[in-house]
Each structure stands twice: as C-alpha cells, then as structure tokens.
Image (tube, rainbow, N blue to C red; front, side, top):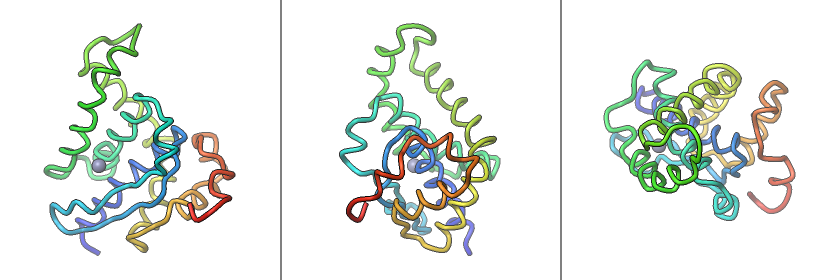
Length: 172
Ligand SMILES: [Zn+2]
C-alpha cells in the first residue's frame, strides 16, 4: 500500500468523522492515491449539508489536515489548499456569528482546529483508524457503510450526531 494512499485515507477520514460528528450525512468517501489528484473527497448528502451551520462546515473543512497531522506528525505538501479556501469562504460569516470570544478569522481557525485535535486525538482516535482501514480496503466507501462501522463502536456513538434513521431509506 502506498504512503500516498494512507495519507489520503487519513485526510478523508478526518473530514468524514467531523461530518458525522456535527450531524452532516456522508454520501460517499473516495480515496485516490495519485499525487495532486482531485478525486479524493468526502461527499455529503446535499440536503443534510445545506442545513449545517458555518461553524459545522468549517469544522469539516479543517479536519482533513488535522487528521494528517495527528497520524503523521505533519501535513502532506499542498494537502489543504482547497480546504483552506473553503474555510476562507466561511470566514466572514464565522466572524459575524462569533458574538463573544475570538474576533479574528485566524483566532477562530485556531480555536476550531484545537477542538478538532481534541476530538480526533481522544474520543474519535479509534474511529479514525477504523475508518482508515476501511478506506484502504475500499477506496470508494459509501456513507452508510462508514456510518455503520462507526455506530457499531459504543464509545464512539456519543460523538456522532447523525442518527441511524438517516440511512434507513434509499441508498444513502
Ligand atoms: Zn480535504
């Protein structure tokens, strides 16, 4: 197995876990090891993502790089350009929503990254590895499968806001 694939797997698993955590339903997770490939991605169920707050979206966007950091001690080169752009697009609304506490975009980013680090290092660490193993075996993993793997771990459940009912109907 290539290192690139492992790195991409951790990156996408980070995005997906934070999505489940904030209550955004994942449709599929794609891991493609080719350098600079744009195909690695975590796809959300659009109706579910549409309901997510700016803060929730920012947590999802920033989680890929943090997952890489936690596993490998650093981020892969260029890992997070798109994610950072995504965060920047949320910045204005995040600042407006932060009525108390940190006021600047950088402070908000640092704050959110701290929160993600705490989650992925402790309560969701096992979940991260479980999901990565799956993604390495199945480079195209449907959201339902990813959810079921995580939901099967009792200590992970309290940290997942997506409910099993979300996956009961249709192929999502
Ligand atoms: Zn990413």
